[in-house]
Image (cartoon, rainbow, N blue to C red):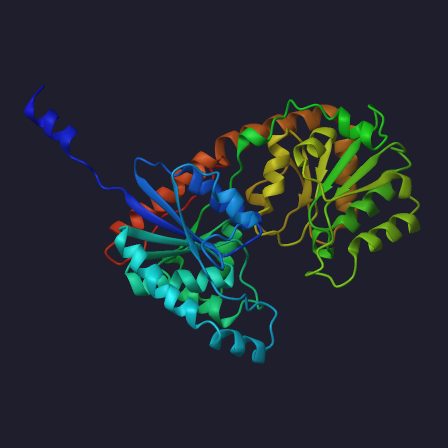
Length: 421
């Protein structure tokens, strides 16, 4: 073997250390996306760590149970201190004064970063995560990235705003979210787009929807619309019920599956009860089925003919990608990040905000045209396979890390994870 080839084999390229910050004890959509990245980052190039929430090293939370299933992931327990969300000023002050051990822990975590040659710290936009990411970046010298899963809004506290201003990069889940940040003063050169993704293995479009139909007494020929989301007014379940009432004369056997639980943080009263009262008022109670929270969403998707969710200002909407992966046409609004996922006329139909007749017309169009539904379903699946896979998300994230580290200014200018249209 020639000497240059031998030398090339002997050269060991050091891996890039990455530390994820994960204070959530219950997995959510944001933590799901981060676990996808953790699981799929190329281990020949990256050494992946996560600081997860634990009051003591032996603590086991639902989030920890997910993290421990990820191969070659270094788990670092950390006490992030109490959540400050929703607390009064007095309670926040008391919590901060009572978090001396957390502050000491940050110094130890900074030492951990340096010891393991961690070059990038990556967090969600949960306030505790974001502040931890920014502080650790400054203490350790590592590059810091906050993953923005929500558009900029007035609810964002000073800690989160300071953190986003202080880190080296913000990775937004859609151009809609990125633009909301830029419009509110965050530099475009450090605001990037990493479109979300799913694990395709969990969404088998060949799955039989018969068991769900039988469970809820739905005949095999009845058209079924699925509406899957947390239940609160912004998700638009009430608008779908109104559309069902408007088309029922033409489609008397139509059934709407409303899947999800009440979001009592978004609404203090039960939206489920409001929706049931609306269905009764409109005379469609027998057409609307409330499934409650379901752990088998692929089965719900398999049972439906159309997926409908007219949610307002959706930052991204992973559920639209999931529906497309199951070859279901999508009925949604031309709002927020949705048009970046659902291409009108190709994978679904979009109506304008507050356009109830437009939503109803689109629903009627899809119900009348089985061939159109099939065409949209096929296109949607191809789009997901091309643009919304976990491998694509991991590779785009890796590019962001690499360019961020290489940039002399500390900012990865021009790195965008746009899906191709």
